[in-house]
Structure formats: structure tokens, C-alpha cells
Image 1: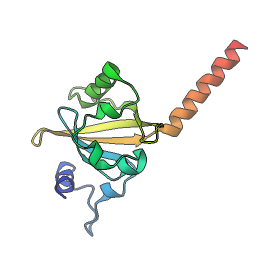
Image 2: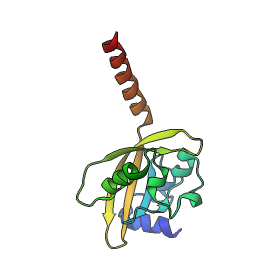
Image 3: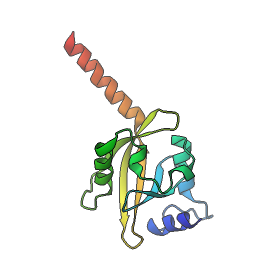
Image 4: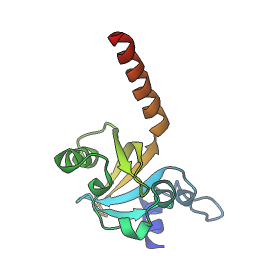
Length: 144
């Protein structure tokens, strides 16, 4: 697959096992290549497995279309993720096909030669749920 070979070059081969199996295919992490325009160019199987959308439905679509946030807020978060001068990780949620939302911590690496950005999203939904529950408990205690 062209995208897999490209992903291997982009990551200096670190995602390829000795026997040729592509680790990106086994990863529970959302791995993708995005163009500088924010459109998804390559997705590993975790996108379909975790979010429920067929990969073909997501390719060549802007990442902000999947986001829990809408409009300018979504565009601003994607711009922050794709900004070359910002080295911080970014947290934002994506809508699953079943209507639920999952939260991800995003990291990226630029490849100017291929005009693409390698992005990796780590599922932090459980931690985010615990954080929100803790805040709600604190709020309830303060109000009582």
C-alpha cells in the first residue's frame, strides 16, 4: 500500500517489524497522514476500529469534520495541531459513527518533503471521563 510505504519513510521505518508486518496496522493509536490543508491522506485501521467509520469515508476529508467541537472552534484546534511553531500536544474529541465521542491526545511530526504531517492520537477518553466526574463531584460538594 502506497500510504504504508510512505508512513514507513516518514517515520524512518520505526513502525515496520523485521518480518515486514506493519505495526501501524496493529496499533490502538490513531495514526494518520494529513496534508497541510488538514485533510486526511492515510489512516491506519485503528480509525475504523475505534471510531466506526469506514476509512474510505474519512480519506480526503478535513479532520475538523469529525470533531466534537463545531465551526471555528474545530478549525482553531486543527490549526493548532498542524502549526509548525507549536510543539505542544493538543487534546480534542472526535465523534464516533454511533454518535458517541472519544477524546484523544494528539502529537505530530512534519514532513516538508512530502507536504504532509504525521499525526498520532492516543485515546484518553477514560481519563477525561474521570476528570469530568471529579470536577462534578467537587462542584456538588461546594454547592452543598
